[in-house]
Image 1: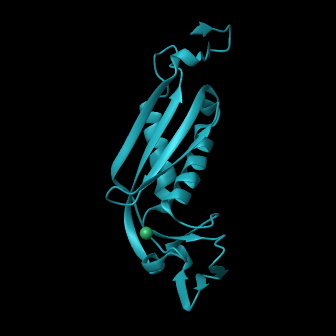
Image 2 (image 1 turned 90 degrees about the vertical axis):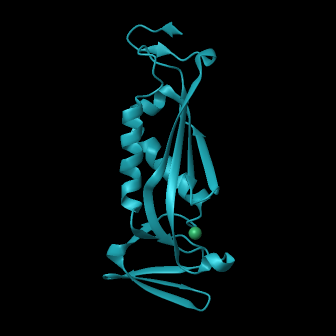
Image 3 (image 1 turned 120 degrees about the horizontal axis):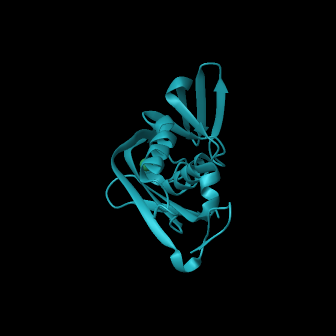
Length: 173
Ligand SMILES: [Zn+2]
């Protein structure tokens, strides 16, 4: 790793290191439905868990990123999803409308009328773990701010119980 005057350290690919945080216990619990996916069309809930893997070159302290910083960011971005009904606002199958204090969702022969304060409307096509992983990846990248510029890649995994997980990754550096 070569020091750059006033610019920290130049990332040398040979220094590439990955660190990972796995949060398995009660990261967030939420209800959702998948508008075109068999039994998952019925509203149901999960205790979601998350993993975040970050790749980069260790800084002069020998750390890719401060684990405590990453852990607090993960908690912060997940908190708004906790104990909410997750609604995919851009669903191609379901019509979602906010009418005052209520959210109305229509698809097929179903109509949900839900208190808006119990819902989190997400700018997504669906609330599959694949989509939620992409959403949380964007949120975590935003929260990392300038720190993300020093990293090479971030990967977020979201699980919904048992062994079901989806991963999304992007190059940030
Ligand atoms: Zn589900």
